[in-house]
Amino acid sequence: MDGRATRVEAALGGPRGVHWFRAPGRVNLMGDHTDYNEGFVLPVAIDRDCLIGIRPRRDGRIVVRSLDLPPEEGVVVIAADGSDEPAGIEPFWGRYVAGVVRELARCGRPPVGADAALSSTVPRGSGLSSSAALEVACAVSLSELAGLVLPPTELAAACQRAEQAATGVPCGIMDQLVSLTGRAGAALLIDCRSLEGRPVPVPPRLAILAVHSGLPRALVDSAYAERRAACEAAAAQLGLRALRDASPSDVADDPFARHVVSESRRVLDTARAISAGNIEGLGRIFAASHASLRDDYQVSTPELDALVDALVEAGAVGARLTGAGFGGCVVALVRSDDVEEVTRHAVARYRVRTGLRPTPFLCRAVDGAGRPTIADRGAD
Ligand code: GLA
Image 1 (cartoon, rainbow, N blue to C red):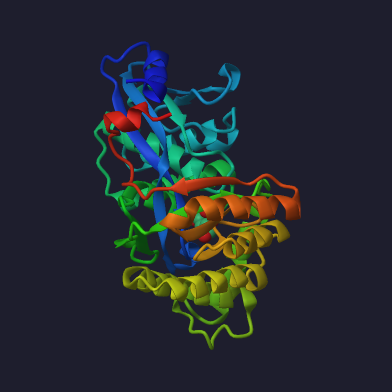
Image 2 (cartoon, helix red, strand yellow):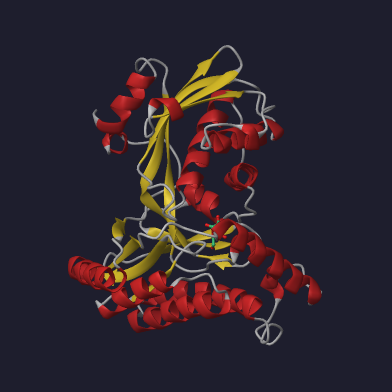
């Protein structure tokens, strides 16, 4: 065993009594800004994860060490009874942990203390849900240690509330739910009203490529809250519980609501096109999604537009911004045989046009959170 697990084990002072868990990041193939409108999403749990080793501790404290940060920022100490207010915790990443501890306490977790160490391969601030991976890794390990058994949807909702408490952003449930329930080799078609998920196998001849734009996400927190409030107001105006229930004609004159309604339909269309191997169809749906996020929902940037164009011109089947927008990542579907060439050409074009340095992440769809295999533990 080498790599991350060795470092985690060393930070815990040896292997005795250590429980291991991993929780993946995600990339969303289709359906952005639909989850909090009770619509559909189609995310994939990816082969980048947060690995955590944990064992009980007797003094009612939860001490978590991150091996990805310098020692002075790398430790948080939180009361196991959930009495710490997440927004008051420093360093900042400890707010996610404190949020999880508080939400689990509210779900009935006994105040069992813990020593934990973790290390993540989900790049931070990239739009691949490093915070959801952190929350879910903490939630599954802390639950197990205290004998708390919750259905995945409840655990995901607890992690979602933890994220909201840590950041103040009224996020939806997609990231946490797919980190918990993703399926290897498949995207997960989630109905964000019932929270039911159905795996949609992605054929091996299609590769999933996330590309970070090199543009840090800006404005995303305030704009996210504004968009969500606008959607809720639009639903209320129509006398509906959520925009999920609106028809295209209900929202024809409202660009934000129009995006939500059309995007949610595109999720179902994408799932069908993937299952049918309809490559041309996928290209059209991805193009329509990006245009809708850019023009109707107004969460794109010129750089994200340039990256989507560069990928399509380089031969991707389809490309669109993914996640909240305002920077971060785009996602592309690429014929597996073409991945290297498409990546090389798209990166070169984008660099020339924007002067930014993009980072490609070829993603494999993996299972949601659970116990790591030996290979998972060794992976750096
Ligand atoms: C962020 C949120 C999710 C979702 C996406 C946009 O990732 O955490 O809940 O709303 O943005 O689809």
